[in-house]
Image (tube, rainbow, N blue to C red; front, side, top):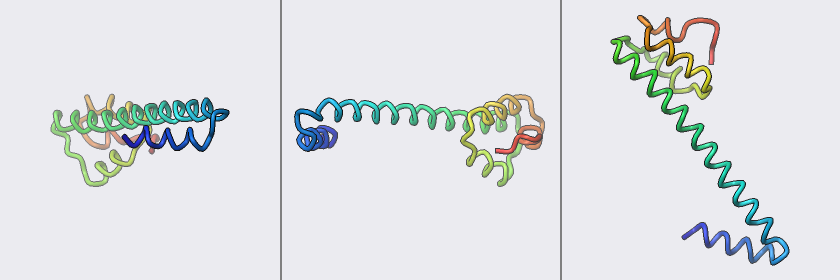
Length: 101
């Protein structure tokens, strides 16, 4: 497994004195990766939710609207858009207002 090979190399380079530091750094990087992965998953889920709500309500989404939705990574904004999408009669009702991404 690549991870264990990398760990072995790092431990060899760090030596006995640096072994704990290597393990701590690895654990921090793993946790950071998990955190980033959860955030990315949440963003993707919210985007899908907005799109699904608009489809369910037969609200067409323009190319600009699709691009705007695809480029947004702000969880708070996506949550607002999802809240609006469940009752919106138009794309403008979802994306309109002063809250640009």
